[in-house]
Amino acid sequence: MKTFICEICGDAYLGEDKPASCPFCGARSAFIKEGKEANPVVNVKENLSDISKKNLHETLELEMQANAIYTCMAGKAATYEISKMYKRLAKIELEHAIICTKLLGIEMLPAGSELCSDADAENFQKTIELENHASSLYSEFAKTSTEKHIKILFTALNQAEMDHIDLIKNYLN
Ligand SMILES: [Fe+2]
Ligand SMILES: [Fe+2]
Image (cartoon, rainbow, N blue to C red; front, side, top):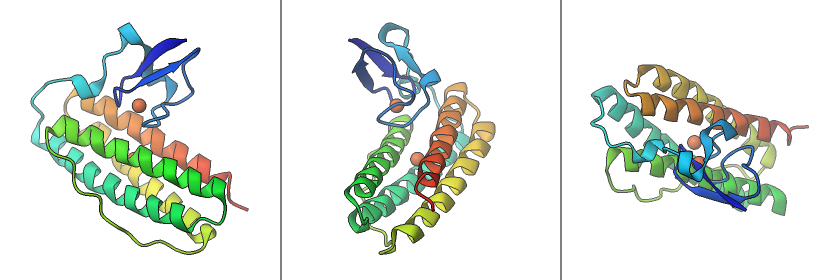
């Protein structure tokens, strides 16, 4: 086994080969490096511009909200598989929120609570809407943020949220 480190969330993955995406934050494999080569964005100590701070604060709010919604959906899911899938999505969104707090140097927000449907089909539609919104916002944030590491972060988050749409599409019809 080897130690791989995600350059987005900074978490280590222990295994033979690097995974197709980070199990913790969903960043694609291009962002996962062998241990000594990794230089995670969360470790960059740089003063952030006002626009980058605004983008990170907005992301933090959105990710905490997504965490609460997916936790609700996990509780309502009709099958064990769908429940576990939403629990993992909730954890990934929480990881995105934690990345924001590390970069902003602030405390984590308390977890909120959100409503969701009793029907998986409606929750799938809602999930696609949320992920579409998040991914397009992050593609904009990748452009407007001024520091290189923040641009990299938002590029990775944009892709991770797009991959969530693919995941949900597998459950439709
Ligand atoms: Fe990660
Ligand atoms: Fe997210």
